[in-house]
Amino acid sequence: MDRIPILKMGDFLLVTIQVDLYDQLAENLETDLVNAVKKHNSKGVLIDISSVSIIDSFMGRILGNIGAMSRIMGAQSVIVGMQPAVAMTLVELGLTLTGVATALNVEKGMELLRSKILLSDGQSDDDDDNDTE
Amino acid sequence: MTTTLSKEDFLIVKEQDVVPFRNKVKDAAVKTGMGILNQTKLITAASELVRNLLKYGGGGTVAIEAVNNGRENGVRLVFSDKGPGIADLSLAMQDGFSTGKSLGLGLPGTKRLVNEFNIQSTVGEGTTVTIIKWKNG
Amino acid sequence: MNTNQSVKILKEKKDAILELWTAKQKAEDSYFNADDQKEDSEDFAASFLNALSDSTVEDQNSKGFDKVKETLLGISVSRAKRGFSPRETGTYLLSFKEALLEVLSNEFNDPAVLYAESLKISKIIDNMTILTFEGYIKGREDIISRQTDEITEISTPVIQVWDGVVALPIIGTLDSARTQVVMENLLQQIVDTGSTIAILDISGVPAVDSLVAQHLIKTVSATRLLGAECIISGIRPEIAQIIVHLGIDLSNIITKSTLASALQTAFGMLKLEVNKKGKFINN
Image (cartoon, rainbow over all chains, first blue to last red; front, side, top):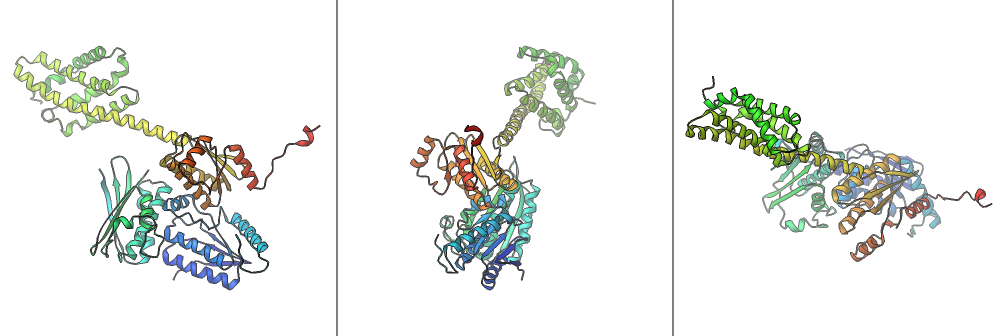
């Protein structure tokens, strides 16, 4: 079974999706990613989708799920590099992925992750899950 | 009037057929000279419909056609399955309705992505969905 | 070789026909410029008389006329582009028919024969006259589609106003086709310049209804999916009134009345400050 590699870099997990997603692959990614967050006690997840040319409602939902699941587990997530045509198609489809943080590229995504982690650490002293937003 | 320039049937029986199918649709779209945005919309619509075909229809065939309406070229896709069919079409076309575990954006969302959308279904016999995306549509 | 009398006559009298035709055109049109149309007329007459034969004269839809029709279509399209009205092009061809018939009537003495032959020629030319209208429409459509392309292109310039800030002034009505082009341009520019803030200025949009608002909301949503923020500026008082009266919810969108205040907001988001060069001025 195909899997998308998940890289660990310090407190962060990095995922670069280089192939076009199909349903099973996306579902595997969701499972693998939450397991990896738990295993490495990661604080942030960055998903680079700059090479993905198609995102339909199912894959869009998976991306939303990953954001929500990481948040519950105390990690921040950001999706970077969405192609303009993909963004316009998602909006037309009615899927605006509110609640998912996005950034233009990996660099800006990293910056955003760091500031989000700083913000959430400042609010809750230790690893208490008292997310007040 | 819409004329068919070429036609190719694609058999969908398992999930692994989806990626090659999407590539075929992309090839057809590129051949008409379609821009990247309309290509993306068409392939996304095809991706939605082929999932329905697998999930609710138990697989089926898709006819990929290059068409012309006298002014411009386009791609027509005809999805046919011999599944249980849809009892209430108008309900299925409402935003937010779904029987499966998806978001319920399926059919109405897909309709917004293409220029022409037509669905016919008979309970017990199957469902046929026809979509057309014009080059500059 | 050609046994049909009228075919023979017409082919022999080519020069006379052309002369007659030019005279008739002159009579029809006070602005007539003989040189201007000489080439077209000669081309057409030659190609028509060439195609005329024993077999084609009997059948107005004969394949033998394909070449003539092509020439005629070309002439009609180019005339349409030069601003001739369809009536002018139609009369142009009908005067050719008159010339043909006049030549024939000088040759045939038996009215019955003349009638029969004239009818055949009339049928063929009338059939072609319809073609001039198709040519006219095609010529006009070429112009319209070229202008549409031009309008779409010039109407959506994306301007980089600051490092990390792009602005797009929208002028004219925002329909769904236009929104698509605007959105595509804006998103591509955001990616190309790596800008995190986009300002959409709608000062030049004459009216905002719920459909236009829908298009604006879509643009903002797509911008956010890329990872940038979108500010809508240029909301005139009457547009603010309409938006509220229609019950359109823009609360999730940053809106400003002027481009200047939008830019100020953008600076704030980028943690930038604009200061006067105080030292040199406050003396």
